[in-house]
Image 1 (cartoon, protein in one colour):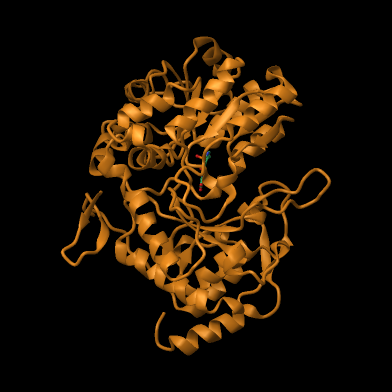
Image 2: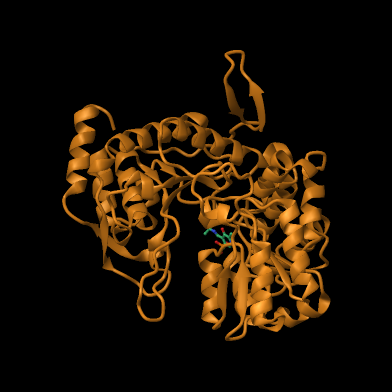
Length: 482
Ligand code: F0G
């Protein structure tokens, strides 16, 4: 992806790939979308994809594959044990991260499960810059406690800070002093912090954070699921990385860690995951869990075809033109929304654009899930499916008390190499319309609230008749359009 200046003076992202396979989309009329949203219990996870126009729910497992990835899938070596495909993937990971040992898993959370089983004891702490839903769930299921040590800038919705994902190193020191190093299972650093807007960490911060952990003999673990975007930001925003190649930055980050795990549904444009480990003894400590929960050590629940695709995808992740596409589309979307006065997380991060529902719908109290309501309203108004990342995505504590999230976001993920700029512009247009009619949008309440990971399959209903009003306003403005 290059950024060229048009003769018109405009700066627009320019794709460095062409589309050779397409999938037909349908845009249902708003009345149909309203019915689909009601059937899905006002939870965008429960929508049928056939009812969705632009699926911005996630980038997980839905990035477009390249011709090279598809070609590699044809030479996959199907063997339960000792597949040449696995060896190719393993070699690629050694080349990229410089760690000798690798345990394959079927996806990222399976890697989290194994790490938590092996390393988290009841009463221990896992400090992290910020949690991800599944990473927290696995730590707490083992009786461990997550401590989020994000720098203050990370929780500011709008900011000029280029590295809002940075770990608060002083807070890490304080936690170690307070609890003792032996009470800390490991330090988890999440590249491209998912839940606070895909915000990156600087290479300097990766180094500082892990140096403190290592000084105290604490294991350092990188969640590299969103590393690709983080690398783009290191390269474009950090002085010391400007003259480094992407593989060099990757290795500089990897050198800080004892363990790197990832969701290959994101990193590597495929479907799978795994854990890279520096130390043989630790590898052996965790190894037994893979055949038990995932599959044999040479596939770990992944299909050989996906493993081939990931191997090529990791190479493509080392290519600036490939990893720039996501962040540059997101930057375009954020800049256009911001210019219309629409509250959005700034600076633009990776993963997607993030609407700030707290300021978009200031009249909807957090107890009525403003981000969930906004995601529902946006689907109804546009056919665009986003994801609630706010209080709905939290879980109740042991006493049944519902914690309020730090932020109420609607994430509009941009899977890599999937959408065109005119599709992104359509989404911007409809969000703009919704913002002008934001007073019409009301809250939601649970009809059915599951205990664990409730956001995935909980069902809700609108409080009051706001959906009717929204539909009427849309029809008044766009009588003959979808
Ligand atoms: N870590 C991070 C930072 C993630 O974003 C994800 C998944 C995982 C771990 C778990 O990996 O899905 O392969 O089991 N994020 C997806 C998302 C679900 O939509 O953001 P997984």
